Length: 272
Image (tube, rainbow, N blue to C red; front, top):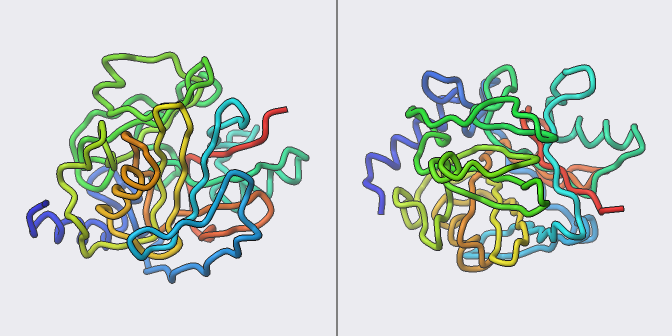
């Protein structure tokens, strides 16, 4: 169990909006203010491959993505280099272009200008490098990690220093933190069920290569969210993507959140 001072420190970081000296959006954005809990989505609105799941008294939406059947991509900016700015704006832009997504959610922490805090690779091109620095805020609650889709199409979640050592060939990658589960163990600094609770989203990968996306419909602790991936979703490795600003779209409407900014965005489409 993490010491009580760590839990209190985490709460202070959340309330600060910008986290520490790098300006990370960790739980409340740089715009300030506490957001209300979003309404629960009707199950009929859930995308293919997604389902409702209650775990430890918290409602979640879980999406189990077979990379062989679905294309998993990351997006940050439009063709003109302008950040999409939010999951809602991204989904609307894709629909207007005639390339609607099956689902989209925010995919990692970002600076005030919406640039990624850590590694970001899109279409095989690295936009920002791996960040192994120390700092304050959730991103730096080490171990942190990387979610990636390899050039062979396989998805993975890997702790950041292991990713640096292995240097896999990736088509898409986003770095965030903290890791929720590492090799079947929960992050060592998580309390069992701490008092810091927000809407949260994350990603894990099963041994068979299935990528599992999850977002809570109501506030959840990091400890419970980690157990969701490890115990209920069979993901030995899982990565926290963000909290409070977390959002999910089914391509045509927002199911959770969407009114706040987003930097990196994870999108899923059916393969042709």
